[in-house]
Length: 560
Image 1 (cartoon, rainbow, N blue to C red):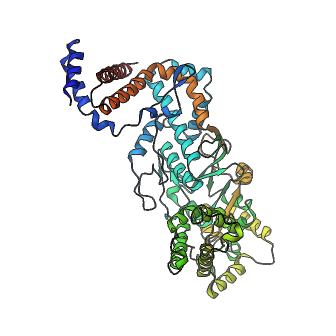
Image 2: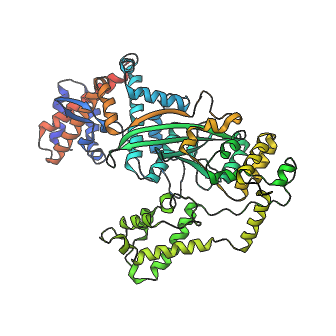
Image 3: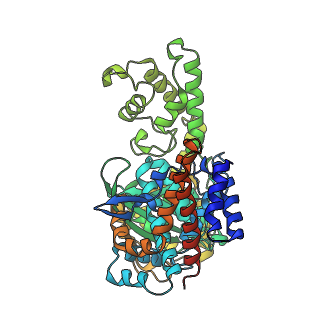
């Protein structure tokens, strides 16, 4: 350290005669050079001039890093080791949001905070100031982090990060893929939750009926699968969007599953069909019912197989030598981009649609070209993709044995010249009158289970799920919830700024001077070192700022 620096500290503290403080600050400044390299630039610190006064801004809210790899998961996910430090930081902040309360209470509290009416402002300006500041920061971090997740990433990445985020809010964790469950996460009590995040008007609650029926037979899940459904209605430029999130929640259980699926989308209803022999024997006989069919590989496994085929084609074609398959893989998003298959989710059964493939190519392999759509379809890479898609479809094309099995299923589940509506109603009535044990057995030999079917509820069906469940609702809603809708939240940087403007005085009164002096400290320290340790004015300002930070932080710690 420069002699000038030591002399400045000596002169500064000789006036006060406090050797302990002098030593403490000297040690601090000795290590400041190492710290500077890791500190954000001064402009990242929170303060900006607005209409002649300094106020806190959206950037002043503590920033929890968000990436596309599931930053807040507690374990390895899809082969990626996820840091736990970021989850811990987020958990510390979110723990202040209605601690121990149900999700409906948390959303209500968040919504009330966001409205920031006079009553909320008064509550934050009175009482224990430390607790008030902690509460305000908890809620602000929630809105900032959620805004970043939903406005800065593509749909699939946002969905995965949203799972992580909600898992932290509920004190639970994500469920790794390949676990044979429809659950995406669990809450702090181990309740399994399937989370759906869709744009407003495009909601779809659906998935593997095999997995759903398996989950409803699990005693550790209490024969229940909870769905949390969120629709987003956002507008604005990418990265700067704002708007509304509508939250819904309901439970599938042994009581209501047949009523709900019987009223689901047309192709979804046949999942609940039961074989004639099972119904006529009052659930005692399953003679002749085929074993459950082999499941199709997961979407992720299908993606790997597709690109393995494509890689072989590319390596054999010199014209494709410059193609970056990793870029193409990212732009296609084969496993999660349902639009690539016209909204259908079963890879290996349906081919890819032309428009999404062209769009993916324009974002990767052909991003520098000005070819029209017809010309894109004539490129070697487009033809290679088509060839790979056809090869994958042929790989899972039904063989003769599969066809014979389907004939047997048709004879057992579609009988007596009854139309599908009549068959569904007969199976539904039998199931609803059965004992819990027979219901569990029925799920295991239902048509959707043995044939690996998929179920689907459109948005209107979810909003009317209580009507669909009818007199067999069971615990359709968790305790304390009386309807499917559980709240609405606003997100967006400009929206959050409005909240900050209303409580800025409270926050500024207590932490503004700390932030202001932190900015002075970093700016002057950087200037002092950049100037070769010659500008003693900058050094003196930095020392004074460091003292103020220490004093104000201590004052805040002593606040009751």
